[in-house]
Structures are given as C-alpha cells and as structure tokens.
Length: 152
Length: 152
Length: 152
Length: 152
Image (tube, each protein chain N blue to C red):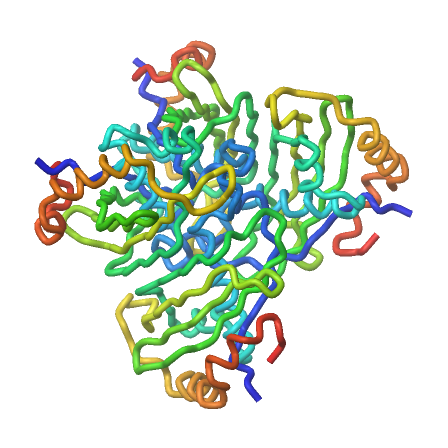
C-alpha cells in the first residue's frame, strides 16, 4: 500500500486572487508547500520536528506548469509525493486539482541543510530510511497521478 | 528640523492586486512595515541592527483606515513617524499616498521584546534616548501630515 | 439558535512565518477574510454570489489586536460574526484561536459597493433582511466569544 | 544599443522573510513580476496599457533556481529580458542579484490571452513588432547576464 502521498484541501481566499480574476501564479508555491507539509506528516513526521533536530530543507529549484486557472472560493486539493532521494537532495512532485481538473503541477528540489551552520549536510540515516522505504513502496508515479483526491 | 519621518516609494505589483481590481487590504500592513524600516534607517539605525542586539518590536495592535483604493502599477509613497514612546511600547503612524491623494493611514503599536526569551523588555537607554530626541524635535503631527512626499 | 458565526480551521504554512518565528502580522487580515467568507456561507450565501450580483464589500477600516503569536504548523480556528449593520456599512468581528488560547481578535468595517460604478450603494432589501435576521437571532457577543471552536 | 532589459531595485521587507531567516521561495515569483513590469516599461509600454487593450499575459510555466538565499533588508536588483517570442507565447528570463552575487534566476513562459473571452490569442502586429525589434537588437544572453546592475 502506498502512503507516500501527502495532500490537503484548500479554499482559495480573495487574498490569492489577482485582478485577472485568477489565483496569482506565485501563490502555487505556497500551495505546494502545504502539500509537502502533509507529505511529511503522512510519514509520521513533521517539518517542525525536522527543524527541532536542526535540519532544514530549503528549496534549490522550483517548477510550475499552469494548466487552468484556479479562482477565488475554489476548493482545491493539493498533493505532494517524493520523486527521488539522494544523499543531500530530494525532489517532491506536486499537483493542484479542482475536482477532476488538474489545474497545475510541478516540483521542488530540496537540499538538506544544517540550520545552525546553514551548510549542506546529509540526511540522517533514520530519516533517509524512512523516506526510502516509502519511495520503494510507492506505486508508479503514472498510477498515482491518475488518482486525484483518492486517499491512496 | 524634523528628521523623524521615514518614507519609501513603492510600485504596486500585480501580486498585490485582487479581483476587485484594488490592492488587497492586508497588503497595507506590509506597506506600513516598509516605511517603518525607513523610519529606523532615518535615525541611523536599522531593525536588522536591533535584531543583532537581541531585540525585536513585535506588533501588538494594528489599525488601517482605507480612504481610496490603491491599484496595480500605482507609484505609492509610504511614510512612517513615531507617535509616542513609553518604557516598553511605542506607536508608529503611517500613511500611504499616491501623488496628493491620501489612500490609507493607520498605526501600529509595538512591544519591545527580548528575542531570546520572547519576553517583553525595556528599550535600552541609548535607543530610548535616540527615539525620544527625535520625538521631541518632531514638528506637530498636523504639520507633518500635510506634507506628503515632501522630504522633510 | 445562533447561526451567525462563520469559522474555519487553518494550518499555518511556512509561508506565513517570519524570521522572528511568528506569523507575520499582516497575514491575520487574510485569516479574518477566510472566516468572513465562511460567515456568508453560513447564511447560505457566498461572497462570490454577491459579486455575481454586482456587489462588493470593500474594507474601509481594519483593526487587529495581537495577544499571542501564532506559529508555523499551528492549527488555528478563525471565527467571524456580524457586529452591526447599517444601510451602507457593516462591521464584522473576528477571532483567531489555537485550542483554548485567543491569539488575536479585531474587526473590519465594510462599505457596500456597486462593482460596476465602484460607488457606495445600499445593501439590497433581501440581503439586508437576511443579515438583520441573523443579527437579531444572535446570542449576545459576550456569550458567543466565550465559545471558541464550538459549533454554535 | 540594447534596451531589452527591465530591472528594478527592491528592499526586502520582513514580510518576505520566513523562520529560516531567508526570503520565502515563493516570493521570487513576485520579484520576477516586478522586473517584467519594468521590461515592458523599458519598451515604452506597460502591462496596464496591455490590459487596457483587452490583452493579458498569464503565466503558463515558471521556473526558479535558488543559488543563495536573499535575506531581510537586502537591497536586491532584479532584471528581466525577453528570451524568445512566438505567435502566442513568449519567455522572459529573470535574475535576482545582491551586489555581485546572483541569488536566483529562472524564467516564465506566458500565453497571450484575450481578457474578455479568457482565450488564447495572437499578439497584435504592433506589439509583436515592438518585441521582435528588441529581441533582435539584444546582445547575446551570455553578455547580458554578465552585467548585473549595469544599465545596458
């Protein structure tokens, strides 16, 4: 069974709209973050725990494809799943859905950082194991991506 | 001469607009912050210096009056001046102008906080003196407010 | 029975935090907006419906009291209720809770605006009736405010 | 002479910082927007003019590479230049500099949209000509990118 996906529901506030009547393109990176937070929580872990251990996951690359505009008061479903994991890097793939419509997708690549020294570091063994276990138990991305809003 | 006013110019990005075609009401609190930063800088001091000394000025009360909407691509002028100073509190009065039009005004009240302990503390003597000197040298608020965009 | 309160739950994203480790003070105005949206929805109406009828409720005054800081990953509960209603104005009172702790409260005052002409207008009779009915059926504010997170 | 680059200076407010002490990764898309606005203005045109003609340039793809973190109170210089132009699409390349340090770069791809119908449309001849003229007069990207903050 695949528990690798984190997701959350999100109601679009007026604050996220712009004068084109769409959600401003920069807000999607916060949407992605919300789903990443839930991805860690789905692993019985939180990013807050991670910080408490002196580790951070700053974003070193971000990409968004905008397929259809999200709008004010839409109820969105945002998902995140781990794409790959290396010693000091990982990629998370995210999607933003409104019902059966995929509005946007993209990814973020994260470095592992020591919060004290602000230097790159290796993921601790226990976290690496946790992440890797889930990566391996994951269904193929193709399958996973077909199932918006399905609690897989 | 009154050097108590901080101000900055600010071009409104699309990001600040909402689908009513106006600047979203919450953004003005960031506008106020920008002018407050310049107020400290006008005193040959910065909020960054303050943090380096272990002190913060968290907002404990904020008020905004919206007179006319700001819009995308407007060139705004935002000003901030100290209204009063107590042992552990201070109030800053802010205004947002577009040319001769006052679009919004309001204030923030700040506590002085020890960043380590996150507890309220007294403003150090040297800073209190600096702020108080400027408060006293200030022209009356009435006069100051009549002079948008004038480098006083 | 009082159905006058709108509320929503909200998980604080990293995007809302600032380098003091608290939620940035300007974000609370978006929090208030989220609860206001739910207040209208609780009246079987939405702000989106209102816009479809050519009406808007721009904010003309906003006030926030910050009691305790909200932090990253906190699960907040935000509530909104109508304080008073006049021909062309209304006030909404909002609160931000984390469990039993009141983190912030405040209010917004709204004008009723014709979206086409961008001029002030009167609230249509049916909406005024709807709002007034709920105002009158409301328990006293004192009582209501004692019940954070209680679905009244 | 190449006037194809738009740029602006930007002082980072506290609002843009997050609790890692860095500028939150999503804000860079607003930074890119600010420079894009100036790119159009450098062509004696504004995005506001474009909207007045019923045209919009919604983003359909965005990419950011984060090289070094920007921080609160940093004075940034943000640049934008046209990478390519097709009948209904264009790409803009952006960079964020602090002094001689390139903090981030990336691009956005835009569709040309009829604001009324919300459908893709062709860029009007006069605008296409304006953009193309500047593309052709542009120095090679390699040269341009070496010149942060230089008014080329």
